Amino acid sequence: MRLAILVTMIVASLVLLPSGSARPADVDVSVRVSLGTFGPGGVGPTNETRTERRNFIIVVSVDTLSPVLQDVTVTIGLPDGLRWGADDPDPSEGCTGTAPAVCKGRLEPGSQVGTIGAGWHWDVVADRNGTYEISASVEPTERDPDTANNRTTFRFGVASPSSGGGGGSGVSATASAARVTPAKPKAGVVVAATVRVSAGGAPVQPTRVACTGSIGAAKVKGTPRAASGTATCRYRTPASAKGKTLRGAVSFTARGQRFTKRFAARLG
Image (cartoon, rainbow, N blue to C red):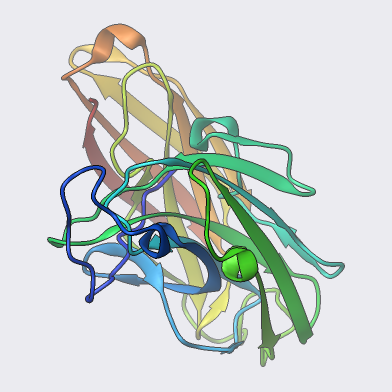
């Protein structure tokens, strides 16, 4: 599933200035790649350089100290041994291609006063344990006085204690709440609901994934998809559904248990 999301960039030192009054040095834009985690506000970056999961999240963050709201283009690719998971770059996020992915976004104010930034997060699957490097670059619209931080390489380790198939055989499966993406879905685009499935901290491959969905009294068909550690339903919403609520459920089987995770998302 290809999902768009704007990640809040926390830039504590930013002071918003009137448009056009930014010093040239303040227009500097930088890019960062990191491992991601679920938090109270959604998915955000961490400072970790190691994961014990074969199916994990990466976050691409673009930051600036400038009050200028501008468009940026981010390019990112995966090395041998890594591949995109269920939630990967797609056109609904402004992305084209996957090797590398080229994504266009806009630097906008974050949820905290005085923050400017943009970001994406995607699922990545490691075929084996090891050390990997993911490189990314950003190209801003405005002239950047310091291009040295327009490229970055994130080095991290994958050391899953399991073979990647789903944890110890005696451990029951658990399922997260359904996560809807884009974070602010709009009518007329594909909306996806993803449930993370694990056992003993390791990803589990769900089976018999089924989707239900509706907008008001009208049913909306969902396309099911299973991957290591995730069950996903994708819904193509009509443009006429602006202001209405998409309601649905993701159902699947894991480790002999049947799960149903419901969700609701208002369409902008």
